[in-house]
Length: 75
Image (cartoon, rainbow, N blue to C red):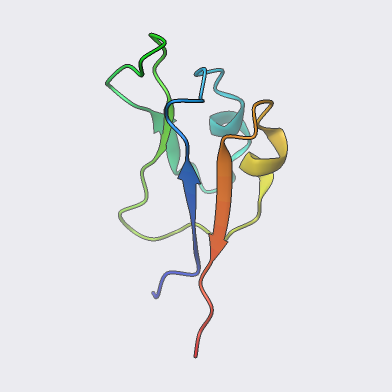
């Protein structure tokens, strides 16, 4: 299936609260194994099957507005 959307997470601003992980209906967000400069495990998109639909739940839930949703426009 062609990619419909993707998210971009600012790993340096993310404090690793996990709210985006809990609300993602496709379960494509997980904690990174590495730390950011503040010592948190930031969230990251893990979507090898390109299941992100761009619903925006992660964006709406993030208290620090670290997430940007990009929808892919078909030409």
